[in-house]
Length: 430
Image (cartoon, rainbow, N blue to C red; front, side, top):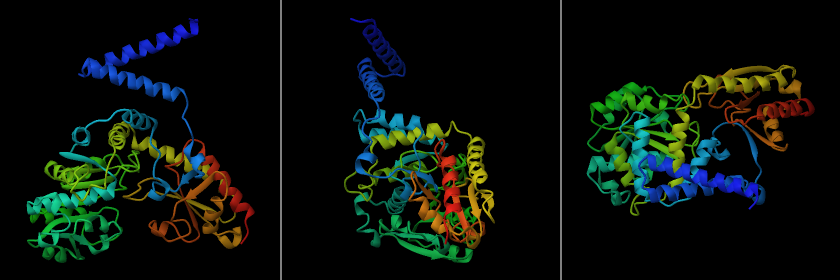
C-alpha cells in the first residue's frame, strides 16, 4: 500500500472516529452515532468529488444576477453555505416527519423567544394554517371539516380594506368570509359571535388602524390576531418583536431575509395555535394543508437558517449592502443628469435600495429599456421591478429611475452590475 493510500485511510478512520465520538457525546446511541458518522463521511466524500452535474446548464435555464431582491419569481435568496450543508446532510436519512416537525418547532420557538413555532411551506402556507388553526380553536372543529363545513361555523376574518391583497386566497382556502373595515369605529363594530381571527398586513402602505390599536381591540374581544410579516426581515429582532407585542400568530417567509430554503416559512406564536396549525398541515391526509408539504431537508434548512441568522449583525450587513451600492454609483455617476439616492424602506425589505434617476431624453434610453437590455447581456441581470415605475417606493422612485437591490448580490456581482449599467446607459439611444 502506498504512502498516499495510507494517509487517505488514516484520515478517513480518524474522521469516522471523531464523528462517532462527537455524536455519541450529545446522547446518541453508539449504533446511531456510527451510522450518522458514516453518512457524514459520505457527504464529505461527495463534496470532495465535486458538485456534480450543473442541472441549470443541462436544462438550459439561464443563471441570473439578482439585483432586484428576494422576489419569489426570481427564486428569492441564496442559502448560506452552512444552510446548504445542513440541507445536504438531512437528505441522507429518512426520519419520522412529525418527530422532526415537533423538535424543530420547539428548537425554533426557544431561539426566537416565543411559545410555539412551525416550519411551513412558505409564508402563504403559514397564513392558511394560521386561519385553519383559528377556525378549529373557535369552533372546537376537526381539521377534516375545513373547508366544506366552515360556512356553518364561526368563520369571519376581519381585515382592513387597505390590507386586502392577493394573499387573501391563503385564508379563503379555509372557507372563511373576509369582513372589511376602514375606520376604528368600523373595526370595533365588526366583531360578532362569528369572528375567528383578524389579519394585519404589516407591509401595507395604507390603513387607518395601527398595529397596537388593532391588537388591543381584537384582544378586547378575545379574538386572536395574525400578522403577515413575510418580508419583514431584516432587522433580526423582528423575529421576536411581533410575538413580544402580543400577536397570537406571525408569518415569515423562510427564503427571503432569513436565507432558508425558498419553499419554507415560519409560523410563530401561541403554542396552542401553532399546535393546531400542525394538525391542519401535512402529513395529515384529510387536512387543508396536506398539499403544503415541507420536506425534511427544508425543515432542517430552516432550523439551520435561524441558527445562521442569529450569528449575523444587522449593522454589518447594512454596511456591506451600502458598499455594493457605492461601487455601482461610482461607475455611473458621470452619466449626464444622473442623480443617485439610497432609500431604506421602513418595514418590508428594510435594506438599501439604490435609486438612479436621470433624464431619458438626454441619456437616450428609458429605465424600462435599460431593464430589458440588461436581460440580454451575459450574465443576465434582473433589476428591482419598481424600475421605471411609481411603485411601492413612492416618491423615492419614478418612471425615470432605475432601482437596484444590492442585498442579494453575490461577491463580485456589484462590479458586473455597475459595468453593464454603464454600458447600456452610454451605448443605447431612443
